[in-house]
Image (cartoon, rainbow, N blue to C red; front, top):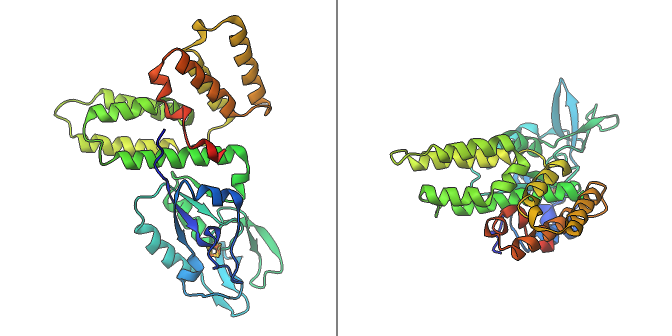
Length: 312
Ligand code: SF4
């Protein structure tokens, strides 16, 4: 199985660059592993607004219903500079598949930065987004955006990996997908992955392709399809949705299996729901049956091979 490398915009300190306020970096084992399978595009927004290393710490505080980025020791409000940088950086961004940001940072965090009631950071208000993280979410609501802390949750990690590898596949197909047959083939191979994420959009994409006529503008249809594909991945797949797809695929083989095989598979789905076995176990069984019954259609499904096994 060939996987295209996802292009991931990553907080530079997570990519082991010594850009934190005290000149340190963050060493995260999973991020280190991920680097072997992805192309990282590192960015440090605080360095990008000329703060330098080392620098005095920044904090977030709430003022008149707005979250401000502030450097207490120098009494500098850096919110507008950070917003300007974010706008400039994000509007020029092309060819990427997701974001991996540093948790808790007043600039990069996507939800767990400390926000204070005062500029001196003495009174805690709530947890919130960093200014750069918040702008990323606002500009790219359909793209996978995570922090390294959240990726320790198996389900969140699986969702993130499935999405970035699916988007890398989509991005790399753009140049070679030059006719409706190729688009149909791509759609066929991604059918069960899309079903897990968004059945409604899967249906819309199927209808779009089915209604294509010889005189239609293929590039336009392709663009609509690609946008639907990206937005369909915006949702979060829980175990119930995965299970629904596993059961659909199981339906291809169930009448060919013996009583004990069926019983065993059903017992494994119960164990999956109860966190005793993981998704991979069920996927491997379905792959074995696809091989045994020579079902190429199922074997080619990206749902069964969403990302390199080594990533867990
Ligand atoms: S968290 Fe963001 S702003 Fe802070 S050092 Fe890392 S990349 Fe730079």
